[in-house]
Length: 307
Image (cartoon, rainbow, N blue to C red; front, top):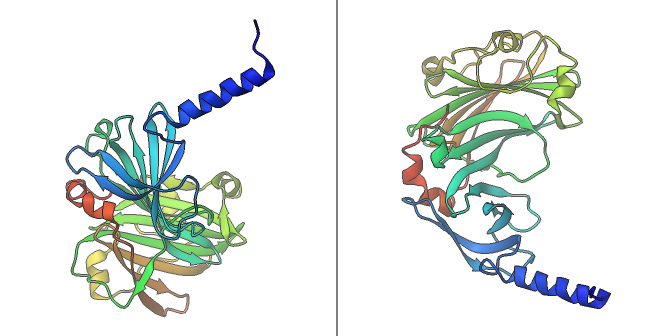
């Protein structure tokens, strides 16, 4: 005999109740106070379950169940802050697959340039180096802001170098980012455009410049690089002695050039901003060292930083 409408509703509510109380009472989304990562097994344990979908006044960890047991965890700032310190992907056994950081490096009328880091922990990656590069991307979303400081310890480990050249050109600005390893060898070239202070999708910009390469490229593209006047090898030894903008001018007028030295896996940076009149200013920034950063420090030390 077919079930009545009320019976079907009751059965559906019973199913929801059982589902909500299964898998250790996990919802599709849960918030927690703390995280603990075993550096040997790379298993992740969250503790201090917070009220479901409640607002948080302090940092917290948000777990989202994706599918087939795969889940993501974001270390977020207070509710409404749009801050994210780390983003994790976990396998069905609760072990780390990847960790990502999106850290603000520059912001201006051209939009926001981020330092992007992705750490690979899963066995399928076989100790793959950390992906680190600099690129212009959209302002919306969650990211980690930089904290200005008076000075950084530049005697520490230099992990990467980046050069960002901003020029005035359609759609309004073009932003070319070259990321180098600590020896000055080019690793990644990223070229994007912006309009009204925000990133414009690469396909839209590429249509304006059919002879150039747009997006993020993990190899040298000499024609595109030379168009923006970026160097294949950054002269780091000379630069440390005398910080000068040695990059030749590209095909279009330059709005600004920014050279950033990234220390200790981008925990600290020194940033030199060169204006078109030849003057330059130097700023120093740092990024937060989170509990999970410390817990993974010994593991990350064994992984090469930068492709």
